[in-house]
Image (cartoon, rainbow, N blue to C red):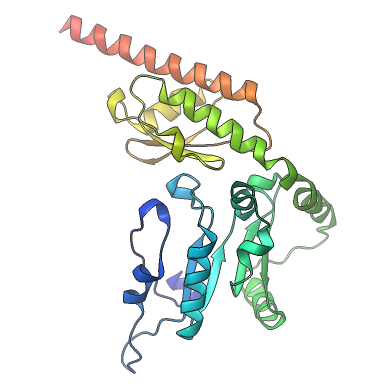
Length: 263
């Protein structure tokens, strides 16, 4: 961010990744000539690293209104904004109407092979075209990808609730496996993050063993594993993943008990 855009980010922890204006306001730099100036507020909906949490619309709009009153623009990282819309039973348009710019992915939740979209005013997009060119982001003969993107945009939102149901099914199953800490009630979209500290193994070790069983997931820190349900994951796949996780952790416990017995 600093190297490419010349910007210095100011971040702050937020419960479940949901910022409020009360958290943001103290971070705004005073208008003093010798200090860097605050120009932009960025939100993320859904919030990836907090397990797909969703911004309540009233909170997001309150931030936008106060930021605009302070002369600041507001950008939304809406990579999975359609998941948020399904979770809130609202339209993506209604969730984003107060923002100055929005990015959303045609891949990820919507299932296209590649692609993201940037939305904003005509003047903003004209500047974005220049930035894209500077960064080498132009693409030739992209019609075949655009066609896939149209299908993702027009058809996939209608079935995103299936991904959310699969994520909840996965969460309930994981919560029943010894050594895993997860509250299924907090899983509201298609991302879940669970704690494996009580297994005695690291997240990377567990993810590596699961990969050998064709279950792909990733660590978010030493003892946290992240899983995502999406267009290519069905209920049978969820059940296979649960069986694989139970098998991996059961094998780990047997190995640990055997080592203790030998000692």
